[in-house]
Image 1 (cartoon, rainbow, N blue to C red):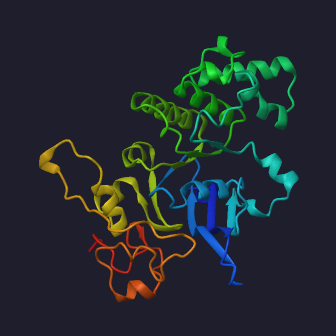
Image 2 (cartoon, one colour):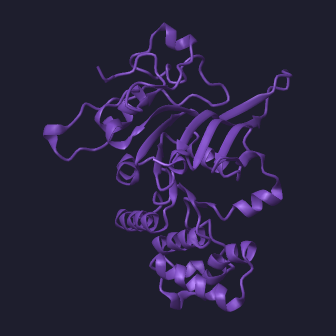
Image 3 (cartoon, helix red, strand yellow):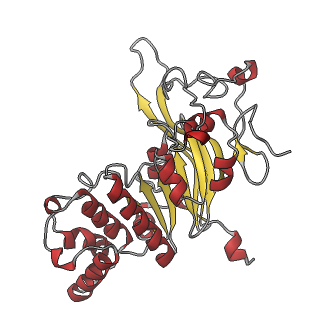
Length: 330
């Protein structure tokens, strides 16, 4: 294997994103909402990393912080070996063509005052400033690539269905030929039949263009379908990270076990016992001491209340942040 293949496309080191919150008028202590609190992972070219967890676990904030749509509070993001977090505004603007995002809501993410041609062509105007004819050719070619009829180039977003609007968002994201795409729950607002079409489109585009995806979702069946590796997040922390097949075969963290037990199984013979987590997700403004999951964990012990478990390799690249991981290889 060459050195080029050994170097990850993206390397995230101890990424944090804290938001200042209102504190008590009687206290001078600053209060922060720790949305992302020390996330680390790598991503190779052409790979899909699925990110899953409950609402409020920090998935979307992590994705936007990687792209610097939100400025990280601390940590490093290395893209192709360069420190992306250290780029100045002019350098950052130039790098946008390599890193793009598909937003969750296909209704709110498109400007209703712009035509489809202008929405898809706007990145070209900012980055490349192409002649009008060449710009239009590229817009039409991108529309065909995502399955949109080129006759609709002068129509407005309100004239399209939800699935079509998401295709417009995808076209806008790929028109510059990015190397990395953050997909922030891109199919959660769509009907099930349309979800499958959009997922297949994303997978086809990945094969064709060689893009890497950070695919964020709360739907475990979607994550399993599209991902190579899966990262499970809880309260701003990574609790498990493994190859897709390995994670579904032998989950190690109790939180992941509980998530997978909630997946409906049509065959009653293979039905698993559902694990119901007690209590609500703790506040990221006041996270529990020790392991952040110990307040809801069915196997928590005293050490879990005081010591933070490290995300460590438990064998075959399967990483888990738990003092008592399950299903470890012998």
